[in-house]
Length: 330
Image (cartoon, rainbow, N blue to C red; front, side, top):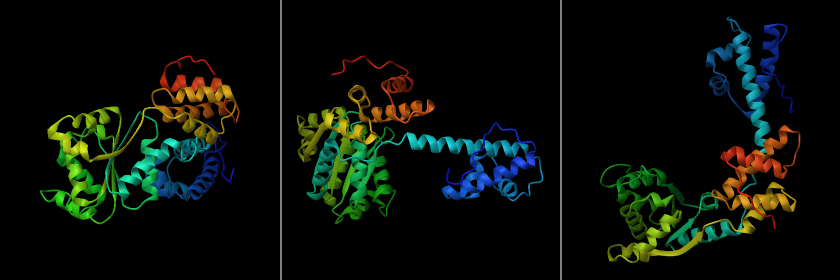
């Protein structure tokens, strides 16, 4: 247990001070283990900083019974958290065929530079692929659009923060963004781009033209329908004509699912078929990973290291409050 003293929050020590001494030892070990400061831990224990300091130094003058209870609960919460994190860990980022296809779009848009589009259903891995591409590349900025960013001005302000331009407000904000990105050979990825107004899409096209950087619009099916519909409108043909490479993935590919199941260590045809079926439901790979994570928790409660089909079915039911539609295993 790495030298950590585990405390049962419900244990009753023969003496409050003896229990406090045991808890102090465990708390100090926990702080050292995870690199936490007393100031970090105090609010988590629902204590003031000075109170916890005094408690740990055995200088607290008040009744320590209540502090003992708070400290014990904190230690138990952290113990449970470590257990769950160990058992609920999804595979690290995998270069699935779909992820590679998305990354090819990002690389093309950045290197050309060009305007590109990635669309797909929820949980096919768009956002993860963008984050991984950003991690491995220079001058890649990701902006997530939402319903609060309805106006071009709101887009400019958000983008100015992300690219760290000199002007964050006022009429010169667009010029400041263009100056910031010009010459960087960079890329702006706009996630959830279906939330953008047409005027905002055109504004980003302008930044691409003037700043000489790539732009990738990334979102769901309504985004693709809107962009392609622009090609039939003379007033928006300039936007549509700028879109170069496009990738569409409505659902995960079977190869994607198989690679991720290998990463989870899921074996056995019935279980893999069930997980693949879940991946094809709304939510895609995200739903499958969450279901498998919780299935491991359920299995651990019965002191098992591997999951079974019953665990997965129960996990799905409890996470979605519904029954997984029946399917015929191949």
